[in-house]
Image 1: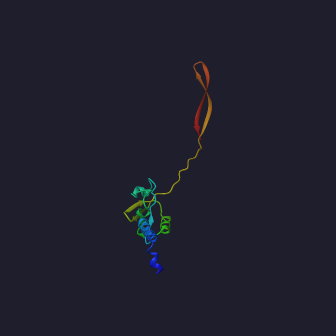
Image 2: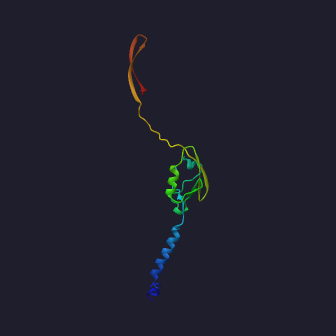
Length: 143
């Protein structure tokens, strides 16, 4: 009896409809597997293979999802990290997503270090100009 009376209240109906519309708007998929691509670095091997950088305003469920690498299923971030940690440079992998398939060439990881080892050397040189001797100061870049 109380249960029937509860559903006669219009506030309860507004609450239930709001919950329903919010679920529809979020579009959850609890059975989804894979790793969503959140960003792609420009001029990286993935970028050069054709994987596009998703829009920052894109809803999470509309992003491209990696489902397999070299036909090994990727179900979560741990699967992805364990596969990526075993990659060797100068090899090629196939990345399968929910939208397309990409061939990515693995490049070696390198780091550029700029060393500030150059210094300016100043010295005085005697130059003869016809009849007189001049002291000229010169600068060179040395090591």
